Length: 251
Image (cartoon, rainbow, N blue to C red; front, side, top):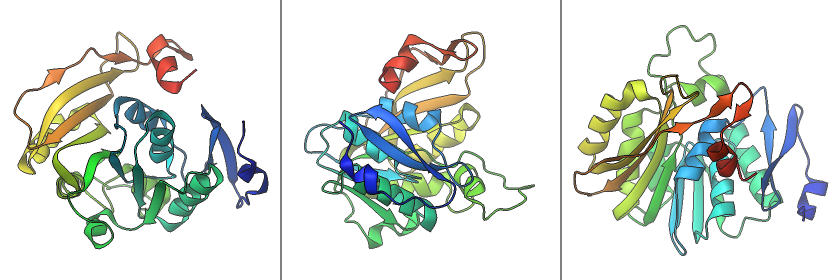
C-alpha cells in the first residue's frame, strides 16, 4: 500500500516521483540534477546488513541506497551523507515521505568531515557508489551536480577508503561499485587503509562484452583472501535484462 505521505509531498520544479517497486517505496528525482542509475541498484543488491547492524552510505545522492537497504534489510540504523544541499534535500524528503525517518537519516555534509557528525568505529557496513573519474579536464561546469557525482571533484577514492576505515568497527564490511579500469588503484588504496578485498564481481553489459563495472566487498582488518565471483551479465539482448538483473530489481 502506498504511503499516504506521498499525497501531500511538495515537489520543486523539474522533480518527479518514481516508484521503486519495493515495499511501496518511492523516490524523488530530477533529471536535470540527479537521478540514480543501475550502479546504485546493483550495489544495493550486492551489499547486505544483518538485523541490528548500522549502515553508513557515503556519497548518497538522492538517498537511493539507504532507501533500498531499508527495503531489503532489517538494519537498525542507516545514515546517508551527501555534500550537495539540493540533492540531500531530495533524499531527506524521500525518506520522510516513505515513513523511514525513525531509522534512516540523511546528513548534508562533506564525507571528509564525517567524524564531526558521527562517532567513529560504530558502523558494521559502509556502502559507497563514488565518483568514478579522476580527471576533471574538459568539464564545462565543474560545479554541476552531474560533474560532482561522476568526477573526483569534491572527494577522491582515497577519501572514501580512509573515511570507511575510520567509521567501520573491526571486521566491518565496505561495499562499493566502481570501474574495472581503476582496479589496481582501488585495491592499493583499500589495503593501504586496512581494508582487505574479500569478494569481487565483474559486471558485463552483454555476455560477449568486456566488463564496465565491478562490485567489491572489503573487510576492515581482514585476511588476504579474495573470491572472484561469477560475473553478472546485464542484458540478454537490447532492452532485455537477464533474469539475475530482474531478481535484483525485485520484479
